[in-house]
Image 1: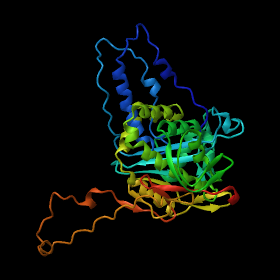
Image 2: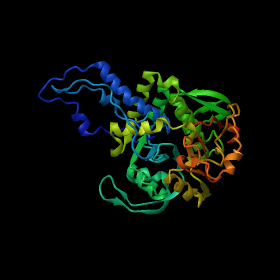
Image 3: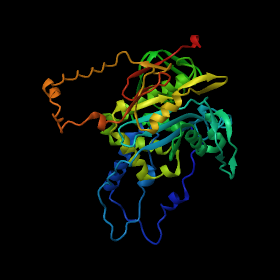
Length: 431
């Protein structure tokens, strides 16, 4: 889903070279403890959007280092949540460069960002959203830096998935900033192979299929029922378009949300978190298949973003597809719904969906029903009669402590990470 893996920086190469001295053997148990501490933090956030949100070079972190005479091995470092909110853009390219030949000739495809998702973490870390922008959405593209020098001219209306080939990851970020009014200091580009490796690292991702999926383009054939997908099967499930909903990219987004919500539940499950091998393997899988923006390519930043996500309740992590309407050759944002969505994001509101899951997904009919909240206790008539009666100071005022909740327009589709959903498939004779 991205171009070929870019070489590590000169600095990372030089960091492995010792000068004027021998490399003392470090304590392997302390080294592993440090690696797992950071890897665990990364893992806890990784399920939010194709597990590509927060990672670092695990391989580099375990290399031998030069120990000074006055140094002693200490305990694993304490990792704190990043202060304040976070906006992080994740793009997935359809480039075949550096990928398995089974995906096609690397010279036959352009470097298009067919997946563009924005992770937003609220200032108080009480909620998060993962917002998908359809690849065929027409948007204005601002001036973008040319990687070879100079700048590219602005364009009034082009599909958002052309930004990666036009000016690289930086251009995609500038475009989404202009579109949403948000400042986005972090970005990552993900490859096909990364999705495959990550799904395998967690032992497979369980997905529910409501109706048979048949897609001869990706080789995806799944009968109605539950399936545990990993490797190529997981990747092709995310790529399938013809085999779900109405065959459009819009229904593919909702199908991807089925997978991503299940991946997040899998990552945060005890089966994953108590297995050091899975923790390490997932962090390693993500690292080897991503290109990170400069601000994100730092161990402490990556780990602190992960910690900010790990304690957010699944019901407060919302996967959203931006509201769009059909135009000739693609789609465009629906206003004022689009602007209202990002006003709520900028305000750090807790987002609540009023619309459906989209044409590529449906609620799982076998999912347990959430119990209705207990009715509020009747008011105390004596307290109501006494205007001087003070409220119990031990009982906090929810309105004063909880973030505002915005119920989004019906045109905004998606689901929470806690929703159990199924993919809506279609067979070859329906295509």
